[in-house]
Image 1 (cartoon, rainbow, N blue to C red):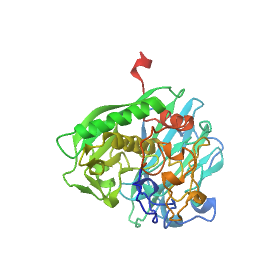
Image 2 (tube, rainbow, N blue to C red; image 1 turned 135 degrees about the vertical axis):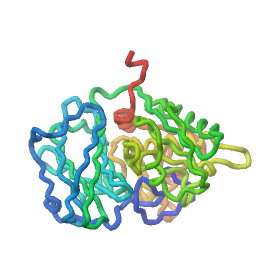
Image 3 (cartoon, rainbow, N blue to C red; image 1 turned 45 degrees about the horizontal axis):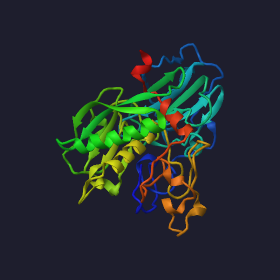
Image 4 (spheres, rainbow, N blue to C red; image 1 turned 120 degrees about the horizontal axis):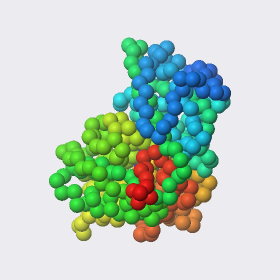
Length: 387
């Protein structure tokens, strides 16, 4: 989320959907050991392991209602990661119920709940919780990936979840296309299209990614959107398009929100897309397409897997070595909310800085940030390069 400069640091529940200080998961049942949820991490994949082809895979799983460690637990899914893997994107979806996952690779734990919120993955309990491997500077993983789906706050009457697996095989492209499913609240979508045009120019210049509007849908009639999850579940766009929803106002005064970091890539899931507040970019002089477009590009950065370079309170940094940091010690006025004029050098000039800037300057991405965006399974090949 790109936050207003006047935002106040308050406790956070869901990192990707709040302009709020440090990012700590709330009310999480922490496991004492890896065996709490009994994830069996195998050194080699079994014969019935899921094989990645580059096409989306959906696996429906029945949940074990023993409620181990405070969560309903699905069966372990084993995914054979090929040598030509560029990236793999995972989502656990149970509707509006919060989900999570634990991961293991080649016989060893990779992400456990007691390490949620920490580098390098920074996974959280969320609606349609998602993970991207790799999401940092390292090479793509290979071998046998174990995925344990978790679903929270459910009773013991039974249920199921769906695990989505999106993958990209082959070399990371220098250029690509992200199809956009445009959703707007009024019949005049000139402002929304102008903002997407600005975002496309930023992402094309900084990461080689062009935005193309593939479809358009009428949005909600209500001027104020309390939260994006219910709306994002109802959208009717192409399966390979990223929903960009324009409403008049967002609850809490946010400029924009992304469904997650990364967001789900599966239509019909509650974190599939980003939402922008049009009214926050209008004044007596008209619509500020530049600022709105910067917000679109920022939220799509979250959608594809980029965290804030540093959070508002100077807390968790992203997992990339070449991104600038703004730390707690830079909080000159001691209000717990780092602003652009408190951060050293050109830290605030990064597209993924946590708050809107008070001045006009070109926003940039580092080479590592651009690489994370381009290798996302959501990015389609540039048609000119596939002829």
